[in-house]
Amino acid sequence: MKKLILSVAMLAFFFTSSHAQFDIEKLFGGANIAFVKPIGDFSDVANGGISVNLFGGYQLTDKLGVGLEYGEGITAGIERDSNGVDITSGIFGAQLFSLRSIQAKSWYRFTTGTVRPYVGVGIGAAQVGEPDATDINGDVTLAGAKRWGLGVSAELGISINGFSLSYSFNVNGKGPEEPVFNANIKDLSVNFHRFAAGYIYNF
Image 1 (tube, one colour):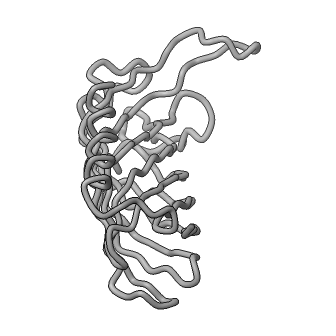
Image 2 (tube, helix red, strand yellow; image 1 turned 30 degrees about the vertical axis):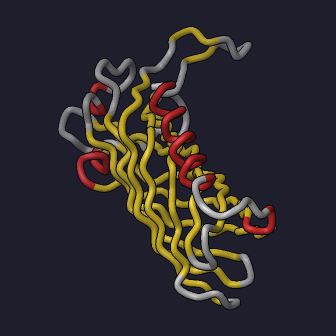
């Protein structure tokens, strides 16, 4: 998996360096916070959650940019009784799932003015994990299962003077092969919607 992450980073670097002479004013970076809404089979075992995402890149043209995006998210798991009725959303405790991704990404902005609608696509590595159980001192007593896989995203958004709103569809790999706390996530395809608000800074 380290090789996959390194390959993603090298892809973005070589794609950027293969174009025109480097210009620091073409660099950009930003961050956003998002609401995560599980969909498909994943919605049967997890409720909504939040994610924080950092990204940076280089403008190849006035409209096309490439770079990297790193995301960390968490969703509340769903626990059911023997009749399949929800009994807790698991905001605390073991019924939580972590979502992590690092992707090589490209963004295309349709205009060059103050208001800039855009689309973005990304591909890279994604991880789905269970939390670690800890004692009162914060020491790990039982490690939750985690699994890396393929991550893909498609984004649609708009930025106004740097402030941005966006929606993205995300494929975040699969659940662990041998879950420790929640067997329902075993080999489950993890897909979700992401509704984000953030800021893009151009150097």
